[in-house]
View 1 (cartoon, rainbow, N blue to C red):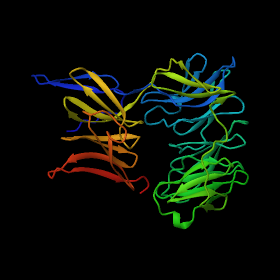
View 2: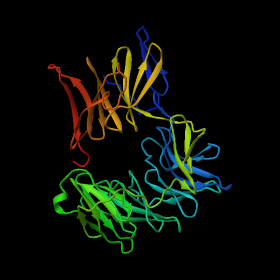
View 3: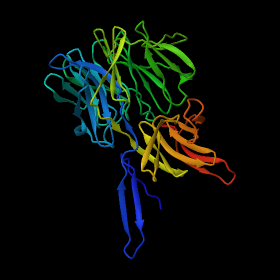
View 4: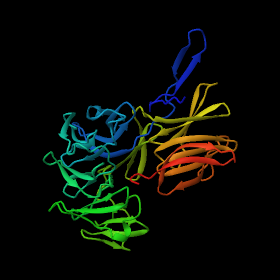
Length: 420
């Protein structure tokens, strides 16, 4: 019999008493992983003119937009559970600060564009442009201020115009039904939107907002590789990319192989005058830089519990498991009733699928891709030494379970990469 626990924030102790009338005792041991840090993405000003820095709060029970005052560290939570409660119907919020001074975001399932009026402290639902939009990663802001995302599973490009509040579904990019992802679009300075598509194979689409026209611009020879291209904006305003071993510049009709430039943002979303806002660290302090001088301010941000994805093995009296988003490794000591959060040990940053106890140490299986790392919990953590990367398999992912075979070798099962 295998007991499957839900992706909950707490580790459960289940005890069975064997008497004439058996009973089960369940004890909540608490969350093994709590992240005190928060990545902040953009800035607004509240009614008093004070700067607020915004990030996303994501746990198994609550999704919210979080604003943190940079003068006093006070956090404001704007709940977005009404657009799809976690964990099954909530996705990574994308956000931007608009020229009108307000915060705009794409949240929930199906995805809704929302506006948070930072003066009135009101959240406004602008609408769901696609009833099927269930997943996305990344977004881009065009030079005219419009907000674009690519969605799963239809590879639809959606848009919000903060100037009017209008939201639009601009239609599918790929006509190949094997393609389902359109992450991380990038806008060029001439207004073109370039969007990678995958994951069965990589495609790259150019969308012209002026005409609504769209075109797949990768050459045929680059369409066989599984996954998707990577894109970025250069200082000259062009969009550049990398795929299938080549770097290139994007144009509306084709790519120009061999032309490349470093990443350069069109604007800095966390800059207000001479103030540059960093992130909240694991000590719950916000980093600020003004005229080259760094300072830190204490915040009341409480941190976010991280979901348990696996509880896998026992070693030297401690129980080991792994998390999801991020793929931290943790241990629980029943004797002391204390947790240890080792942080991100796995090569795959999303999920720890399994942790195998071997006489030499622990083999940690993780996603993305199918990765395995070796960790000796009796030795100090040292980058590149402990843990040590063992393997990452191309075209495979999700190494669900590991075992030690009769020959002493470690075996694991995987699934084909998404789209294959």
